[in-house]
Length: 226
Figure 1 (spheres, rainbow, N blue to C red):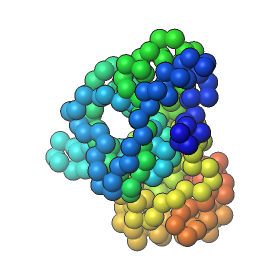
Figure 2: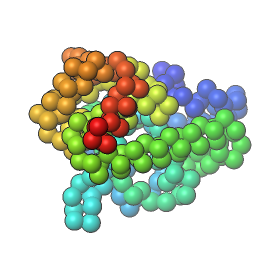
Figure 3: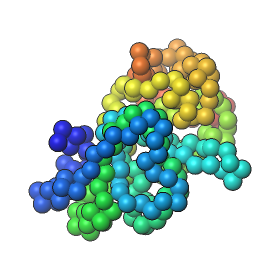
């Protein structure tokens, strides 16, 4: 199975654990707009993106949609829900045709019970995602569009959560707009400003990050009004 090379946590398993995980692994194609996870549905799989782009979202009490984050290639998500065996509190939807892998809840818990490397991976996921959401909340309160775009890009280029992205993210300005809650035109203005500062380069069909640390510093500086 060619997709196995892009699954980071598999490499830390011993031979028996890897065989069990691979035997249970399911790989599916998800159409644009299709919901992979839905609010209120019980978690049956732990999912990861092999190719494509997903978004994690929900509606507020007033029915206003809110996007939490995007999930690009290499990203695995929902481990907190699977650990607690809860129903989903968010929707996961494909922004474009995507290839998604998953292992069942029982296999996930079997690995948690016996594999130290797997536990380290899950702990790292939870820790990094918590930091990401805290930063997102701080910047969303500021409401600055440039900070929102910078934060959205920095989140999608997170090397630990999304190791499959590398330095070039295949994303359209419309897709980025869906993720950060801005119009395509406003996203374009923010991207041009970031490119003028040599933090990113806009390429055909995507965005290349030239200075990830600089992008994060810029995001924080704008959010503080500096």
